[in-house]
Image (cartoon, rainbow, N blue to C red):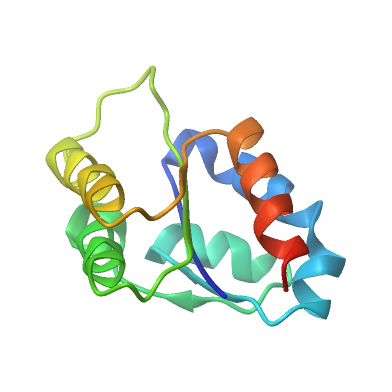
Length: 124
């Protein structure tokens, strides 16, 4: 299973906290994590193995969208900050559209991520 992880700046701590709740399950299961650059650095510092791509605003969101379009991902977790403006919003919208087009589960907040992650990791 391959899961992509993205978090806007104001949500990076939330992402690390979320993953920490699944640390045992992630280490026991065959789960590969891939993340945009800065998010990946935060995740890595928390003790997780993660493949880091470019930072979101400079192409990381597009790299994850390409992986989704090629059916290389089982899930995308993107903790968005809806109360802030983001210069790469077109990339964010493109990623969400690609997930919808290719039927890739997409969680944009911890509550939906928790439900989807539990369901997907139970089947491993």
